[in-house]
Amino acid sequence: MLALEDGTIFEGWSFGRAGEVTGEVVFNTALCGYQEVLTDPSYAGQIVTMTYPHIGNYGVNPEDVESARPQVAGFVVREAATVVSSWRASGMLDRYLDEHGIVGISEIDTRALTRHIRTHGAKRGVISTAELDPETLISRARASRSILGLDLAREVTCERPYEFEAHSEAPSVAPHLVPVLRRGETRSTQSDQAPLRVIAYDFGLKRNILRNLSAAGCAVTVVPGTTPAPDALAMDPDGIFLSNGPGDPEPCTYAIEAAKRFVDRLPVFGICLGHQILGLACGGKTFKLKFGHRGANHPVKNLETGQVEITSQNHGFCIEPDLFDGPDFVQTHVNLNDGTVEGFRMRDRPVLSVQYHPEASPGPHDSHYLFEEFVSMMKARREAR
Image (cartoon, rainbow, N blue to C red; front, side, top):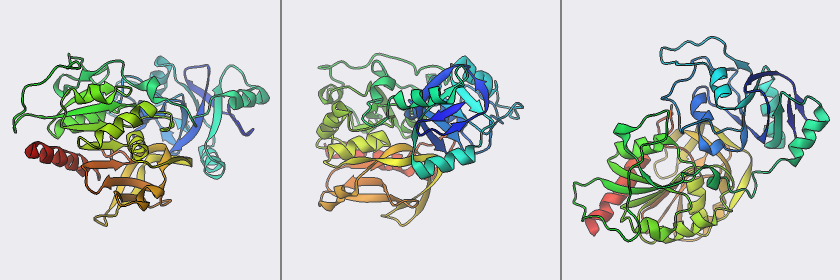
């Protein structure tokens, strides 16, 4: 049974782990990529509903993951496939969820659930196989924690810094850990041929972001989201990357304060939660969207080129457009579904920020050029030093 805080009840069949779980019930409109959705740390604390009716058709494998394990609180589908049709498959979705302790529910009317969320907004909910009394579950949903005001980035960030090495990465486990510089240590002077050094703040970092930065010629050091700015600057980076992540950006005061220091010193690139944190650091405000943007098919217009990009998105908060009332900031992208802010830059500093996921895996790939822009900003700074 799936129960929402407003009293709405859905009955279905259990798949994955038997048990009970609470979270914010949201929906994702992607037609494929369910394994990437499951393992995206930005979904921490959320029960994700897939609007596409058949989920699990191509099974699961150790390569299509964005973190070491599934991150969703729960999973809701119309039909969980019992036959796998893919040469890449190494297992079935149902067993994969069970092995990782993820509670799921299938055979419910996901169209009705999606329309309810679109009309009334994202709701706290509970999935249970143990307790099937509606009133009891509704009470538990109402008593569960709200995403609003919740700092989930602390819960999903890495424990210590590490260097990302693409050639040695094992997709099904945590990235390879090697020693990194400590505060006060210095690197030898970088030559023009040396890789660009990027410090990536992990607020819920997706693995494909690291792959894209590495493919663009960057040597990436990942640091916990709580890392103070002086510690990151002591590593002598060419640029700072602020990653995606779950929850409300406003409680992440440690990250906002660090971002304030970075925009005055280095090229900065933010996406998703990192974009919102950067907006707050620049004096903007954020608000919670009614039901968020989640899927792989959201149209975004680049206001500087006039081109429309099909984008992958996963967020529940957005920057207020008031940020652009002043002369220092320029809105670069707009969501064509609801007109919300999808990107901005600073006029006189190398700061680039977007709300969506340019690294999207399995796609779309319309926005990969943003990594090239980030690299160009870092190269310009290095040449000017």
